[in-house]
Length: 129
Image (cartoon, rainbow, N blue to C red):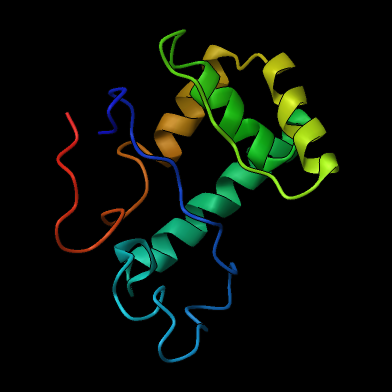
């Protein structure tokens, strides 16, 4: 659980269907991020594909769906998305106008009942309350 009491967000979406193709020495391959470990990687890739399908059904991006989910967790939770270009900033802002239905939220819980597979980082991870 994150400090807000919700599951941690998904990592950067993996290259779905391609397996873990990162070069030797890349921290995503070397075990620093358990999300990328064999077994977890494939499960997270499947979850990303399912969330992408749900987002497409709603006519939004997967990122917008994720931000709308965070916003739906309560007024005590505030997303802090980063962006490298103005187009993405506008996309992130538009997510605030997306209201998820109880069906949407149930489907997301079905896809990721406990958040992403694997710990966020290996070793001395913080203890979430």
